[in-house]
Length: 459
Ligand SMILES: [Zn+2]
Image (cartoon, rainbow, N blue to C red):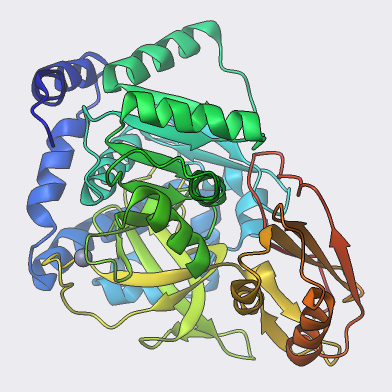
């Protein structure tokens, strides 16, 4: 990387000063996190245990919801001593999280931020958190981005959806100043027309950013466009993606257009960054000082156990630093693969998990009710990668399947329909299939592309 005095000034002087001005000790916390990410696992446990016990006791004594939940489960806060005791606390699913927002809100500390997440199911959930939690969120996010080589003071281009709510003029001005100080450029990825994609390519060629950050599918669409049109004019640019899961051929497209430095991040509005990929590209390191990430397998009787290494389970997250409106063992609604403990090739000791398979609702059912992971369509579209620009699979409540396909300029080969029918017949047995060749696949209201949509079905 070339010497850049502005970057140096930003990272050493301007940005820390700006953070202090806003009363946010992100910098200090970030430095602490960076020092601690190679600590021994005993040291990490020693760090997390008091935070967890403080959270559990606080939740019991200061929120109506957790007092009731602990009492019902026969858990007395005085009995809680170690990280393992977390398993005694009941899980919190999304519906309960929605209905208990006020009862989970503690008398103190004050709620500093309240925001609503729409979620993929459309039911809004209000998330409230304290100032302390906000510092941890900011610091863990910057630490995770740093593993991809993107640090404060670097120039990044972000491809995001538009905010659902328009911020007030003052908030907008603060945001603009914040972004300008950080040299971040924001581009809407809502409409991926040829004209817009070309404008993004020109921006990248002109600005030569240190990183590209954004929705996975938006970046992959851009990557395919760059390669198809022969527009790559840059060396490797690190790509940090999140919000939408990518399939192996999407990652391959990113590597072809921007180089091999492709990094997955996993987060949500409830917690911000939950995990991020490091340069070893072998799973995601959890934001372990801020969150406890559990991967759980449910037994038919409803009880749960931790997933074994390599096994897939439901993601449950506990936020150690949000005392204002605690989230304890919150089931996000995603499936991820558990990993064996042990250090990563990068030398960091933070626990790892992943890959993240995505929403639980991505699991389809065949005519007999057998579960079929939506990811199988990856296999199918690997075969058709040179003929399809984008696709979407929708399973209706009555199990009918609709495959929407956007072909490349050359169109679909004649054999495509029989390949598709044979594939669906083999993997999602017995369901009626409809194939639609379309010019575009509509994005969700927040600008995401859902490759697999499964409507609510009877269990
Ligand atoms: Zn690592």
